Image (tube, rainbow, N blue to C red; front, side, top):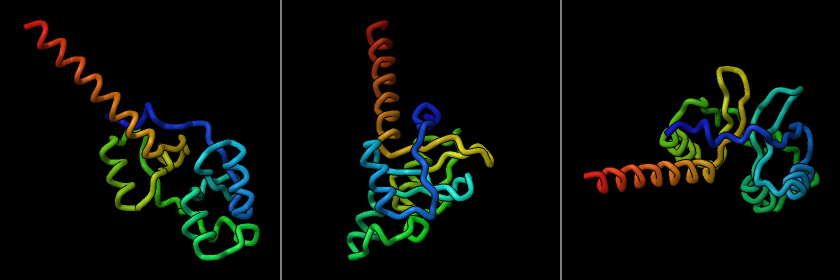
Length: 139
């Protein structure tokens, strides 16, 4: 199954020069676990609640003093909108992340999360079960 249906197109963004505290407040306000990081209106990475814990708080760093660009994931977390759920999961496993930036060539499309992929995969399984039940009852 392609990831297209699960892509979140409306994402929160923050400039890379803001502090981790600014990002944490934005994520709390919007009740989200990640923000897309920009530099001069270009997408340069993603910052997640995991970075807050692993790269800032867990290292006894002050969130009000740490700049996002110093602790964010870079744009190496890019995937195409026509990628499959399996490809996305493989990349997440390889990069040890739960969020991927979706780009169609150079154009930012949105964000896909592990949760989105789980939902898509479950929908695909439900569809398959329905088809199999229909096949069985028709024979």
